[in-house]
Structure formats: structure tokens, C-alpha cells
Image 1 (cartoon, one colour):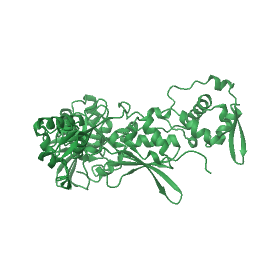
Image 2 (tube, one colour):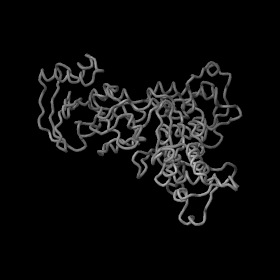
Image 3 (cartoon, helix red, strand yellow):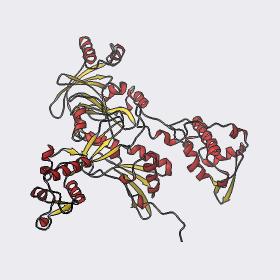
Length: 526
């Protein structure tokens, strides 16, 4: 609605009676707000304006603006909150979550389509068609858009999560707002309160460095590994000891450089450093009897990846979906299923198909009398299962061939069942997670991972985890020609690490991952 500039009809200060009426209308529309909340949203003596506008399509809209920040707008006598109001009260509306690249599509004027909606472990929010709802991105609970549900929750699931989900009315950074919403006075503070932050002051970063250093020496480094390159020690040991929700950053400490930090540790007689090759330092000795090291107790939550399984605030850890392959009765095979009252479009499991076909063969006495391993072909089977070139040549089929031909001429479907959610059935063959390696420039390779969303995996979460595992840069990119999918790009050939993450950590079955055979082979070069 506010994608394009609008025309302002009037901008007037609100009257006392209109202020009271607005407060009553908000209370009626959003009963979860108490008296204190209403007084904060519609204060008695602060600047509050009524701005009447015409949207680019001619819709007459009334904005209620507090200190130049629009908090509510009224369309066709119905009141809607803006994202400013939702930043103050994030739980005011039912929330749908989506991937960050989808927001760019919404800013261009598109509605939120159901394939772009992330299904949380608790299931979709309960909404009816036309209910007002908010949209957030994965890993941030701050709403970024407001709209109305195009379908009820039950209808969304029964449609296989296809089609339009939320009709967009207002998004952050569109023409409804007078400035950059992330820089507005007052609102900026509340927005930051909703965003995760890992930035620490220098004193705290120094303490975090010491904690990770001691933890790595006590539980990660083995005597057989010495001498150990200082860069390897930081990358393979210290980073893995960083607590979840925090980020180890040497440049934000008072030391600024790893060499200065390790020299300080050497002065405390914790380690001894030596330049084994020119300009490259190594840890050659660790004083395991040092009192500070012996008295150190590692925190329980030390694995950086421990936080990765969390899908967000209030979400349960990720569990892989149960995937069931199903088949839909097609127009060509429908005559075989009429006796069982199964029409075109009916979804069946392979075992049900087998039972119905077996019953059809027996009822029509098609089992070959001389060899019961074969089934005689009648006109119906001929039309449904045989190619035109086989009409005059094939008069019987083996049982296995009969079943495989039947399934081959039906529409393949698949059912995804996430823990605690209603099953979702989608037509077509399920896409595998694709891992591949591409060349960038003359001698650079990158690993590309796509189709993570099919299995309910957050590409941002996978990207961050791989970044810490392999200590390489990662990038998220929209997939050309796909509306709601994101490509994870990792520097270098990281197929082995990506495969290990998906197989061992997220427990995705190997048959749903393709490209693992392209991992670099171990061994010495000749």
C-alpha cells in the first residue's frame, strides 16, 4: 500500500475528544493492551497528529503520528498498527517468520507467499482469513511488516503451504515512514533491544580472550600437538571455546593482535613462544602446573555450536523432519482405483497402492493360471500402464513390474512431518540438499549449498556454523529464478565439513544430500 509515494490531504493536531476515541478504538481492536500501554501509545499531552492521505491506488488512509512516528493507520474503518507500534509491543499480533532475502521482494510490492514462510516447531500461529498479522525475519523477533492473512491457518496447511499467505499493507522503510526507522529517536533504542548483539567493550573482550585461552589449554591442546602454530591455536582451539551468543574478536580487545596477547600470557608463565621459522611464532611449551591454569574451571556452555540448534527465542531445537514418499492418483491411472472409491488427486502410500492393485487383479481374475508370478493384461491395464508400442506385444506383466509401472504413472508427492506440527504434503519429487563446488576467478573455489529450506533449516544458521567450523567467509545469496530460496556460499572446498554438519549434527539422511562424493580425497600428493 505504501510502496509508492502518497498524497497528503491534511495534517492536523488531534483534539482531546479524538484522542480519547483513538484510545478506545485501540483498546477495542487490541484487548491485550492494558491502561498503561494505551497511555504510552496515546499520551495525553504529547504531540499527536492525524494525517489523512491518499495511497497511490486511491485508498483513503488515516495515519496517527506520535512525534513524527506513525503508530497506527486506519483503512476502511479498521485500525492497524505500524511496525513502530509493534517494536514496542512485539506480541501484539500473530507472527509469521520468513527468510531475510524475502524482505526485498516484499519491499518491491509483493505479498508474502506461503513457500517463503518458515514453519516453527510450535506450528503456524492461529489466524482466520483477514486477521491482522505481523512478519519477522529468522533470528530477529522485531516485526518488519504488517498485513492480513490471506487464508486461515488450517487452509494454509491443507494447501500444502502453496499460494498467498499474508497480504502486505506496511513494511519498514517504505513511504509510510518519514525517515529511516532504525535511526528514529526513541524507537532506535527499542529496536536495538530486540536485536541480538555480540559486541563487547575492550575489558570484557580481554576477559573473554583469557577464558577461551585457558579453556583451550586445559581441554583442547594435547602435549603431542606441540609445537603448535599460534594461528592454528586461535583458529582450531580458542574459537571453539567461545561461549554461545558471544564473538571472539582480537581487534576489539586492548591487545589488538594475537602476538601481543600471547606475549602477555608468556609473561604470566602460562606458555613459551618461539619463532621456529622467520616471522612465524609457535607455542613450544605449556606450563600445565601453572596455578592459574590448574584452578580454571571451564563453563558448562562452551561449545559455540550449542546455540546453533536454537531456532530463535521461544523456539525448540531443530529436529529433522520425517519424510514420507506418497503418490497421487493421476487421470491415467484413475480407472484402476475406482473400485476402491479413490478418485483423481487422492493421496496414497505405496503400501495402499499395492493393496488396491492386488485387489483389482484378484477381483478381475487376472492372475495367470499357468504361472502365478504373472498378471494378464486386460484393456484397462493396457490403457493405464502400457506404452502404445507395447499394445500388441505385451500380454502379461510380473507383479513387481505391475506395481512399479503403476507408481511410475502416478503423481509423486512427499509428506513432511516436523515434531509438534501438522503434516505438510507437497506435490512433486522432494529436492535434495545440493552441495557443489564452483570456481571464482583463476584459482579460487567456493562451496555452494542450496535447498536447505525444504528441510526446515535456516540458511543463516547453517552459514554461521560453517563459518566458525572452517574459519572461512560465508555469504548468503538469493537463488536466481527462485522466490524464496537462499544459496549459502562458503570460501574453499568445504564439502567434507558441510556434509559432516548436515549428516552428524542436523541428522539429515544421506539419501537427501547430493554432492558429497565431490569432497577432496585425503592422502599425500605425489
